[in-house]
Image (cartoon, rainbow, N blue to C red; front, side):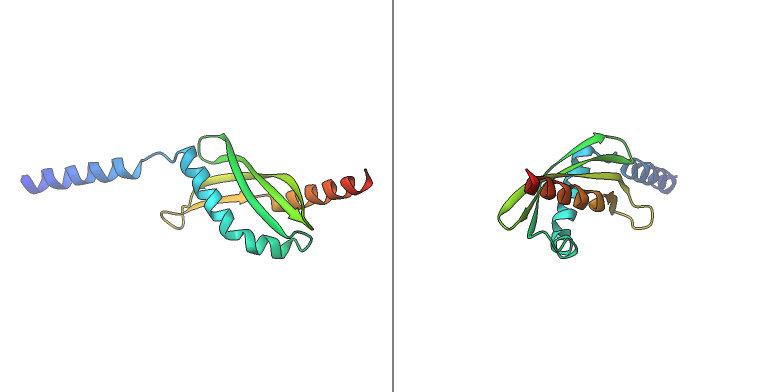
Amino acid sequence: MKKTIFLLSLTILMVFCSCKRFTPEEAKETVIAGVKDQVPMLVQQFFFVDDISIDSMRIVVDQEPMSGYLYTTWTSKGISSPIIVNVSDIKRSKEAKGYIEWMADWESAGKAYMMNTLLGDLL
């Protein structure tokens, strides 16, 4: 009887622990940390940029899958330009337990930077 109660209690505890809500603050921290780790590869991909700094993030949908905006500053030849990167599908990974996955639209951000640079040169 004691063993059954113990196993039932353990099962209930495991269910409550696994149902912990993924918060927007956790999402922001995870995405910012992950993107900061990716910056060297992003700078290599965008050969026209010397550096990309991650300034902050705003979550606009606060339930999974979350989405938001990453506020960044792109620098080239000493000139800085603020660029907003769309981040979507922020959620817990179903394949890798404990991991968070997201999609960031770096292609559109690169195009926005190029347009800002071209317009800045024309004006």
